[in-house]
Image (cartoon, rainbow, N blue to C red; front, top):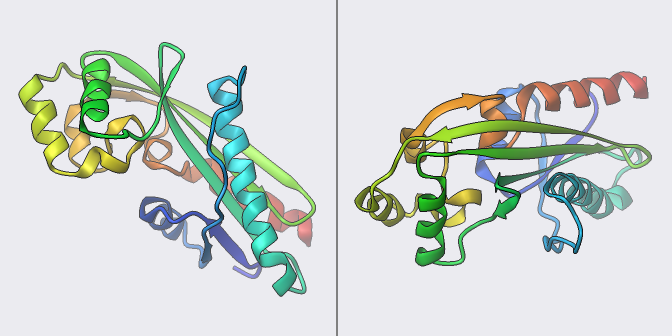
Length: 195
């Protein structure tokens, strides 16, 4: 790829997905406040987070480059009954989230934003995920693997948590953390517009 691309994320899952698209990229890890604002809907929140990550990454890199690099930001949240289920704060919180998801549907919202220093484009992808019923023993055993501790909604679909997913309607890669089709489309569009 001719244009310089940077991923504003320390997530190994997002790095693997962007590599899957065939792009070479650098990493930046901007530090932003990820607190939801009063009155903000889950969709507004996840889009704002993706945009802020892209812009913060751009701010870290732009002074070093003649041509501003393309900086990609992304954020993923799990929403059920209008409530955002973030990363669990502890074991009790994680297990409570899994009990809440057990046997029910929830939505995963992933926003991806791309900045070239002048423009900021984004896409929002919403995927429905349905969990099978989980026993307390299954929930406890899953928590003890350590996998849920740093995952939104307290599960990773690409890992052991995938064992609990009965059905998915939408983008699997978006649930993992980066919607492949939408990300590729954003990058291709911005590169084409730069020429």
